[in-house]
Image 1 (cartoon, helix red, strand yellow):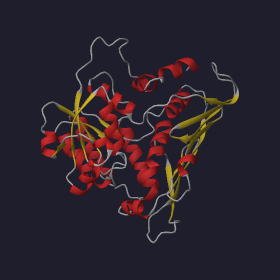
Image 2 (spheres, helix red, strand yellow):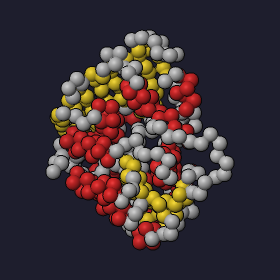
Image 3 (cartoon, helix red, strand yellow):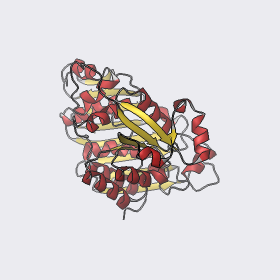
Image 4 (cartoon, one colour):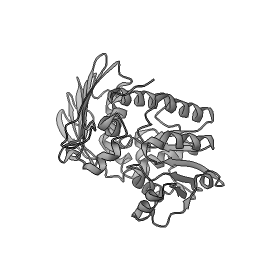
Length: 359
């Protein structure tokens, strides 16, 4: 994990996954390969515009079209820049498009799993946005069906391909941090009444809405927690019952993790953090996106010195690496680094941390 080698592998968005999750790219591409045909179902998810933008920038994918049966949502999306010039299709037309290989599921959260299940039944690989619905059994059925059909479901947790998190994962995996005994993570923001209204149908509040991004990283580092304790409050000055201030503790044999999420924190994006402490080192990512990273080491490692230091990171367009990695999975060049078992453990943890049932 030599510093120059590590950073050089992350120098371009198209190579992010090659340095982070074991993708092997050809040294010289003789000719451009045929693009993979993909569609998007839904525009109602908070990440829908960004995902569509990444697909349209990608040299790996050809966007066939976008499905949005809700006329109000379709009119609103059509006015935004990422949707200019797209072909609008019915779901039936999209899923019957000749040569279609993949679908990005970007509906409102309540519709993610039903839409994903229909796409899998049609033989499509998925990029499925988060969180994976409110029913763990329903999510398990979708994953089981995809596995049975030889299809990949890539979850849309936004820090998986983030270069700071990739540095953290690798540092932990290669023993730079020693035994991890603590993870402290915060992910919050401040939203108004209109955005709060969209979240009211979901019982899990801000932990369900935001917390999954960092819970995914915690489970990736430490596995499924032994015990989860959820604390929830309504703290905002709004006439609703939205759980907008939440804390979850995740207990492991040798570590304790705290996950805080709120929707009432002024400039909360700036204070978002993911701090991993081990008995040989600490990784402090703050803010999370665009990321800034500090590393503390008990002893020098390669070009990194003892004590605290800043680590330079590349600036990468959000979501580009997700789709570059997915393209390699679809082409059979690699397997996705995150297994269905991991995704199930993450979703169970999200639900429990949100105070929601998992049966």
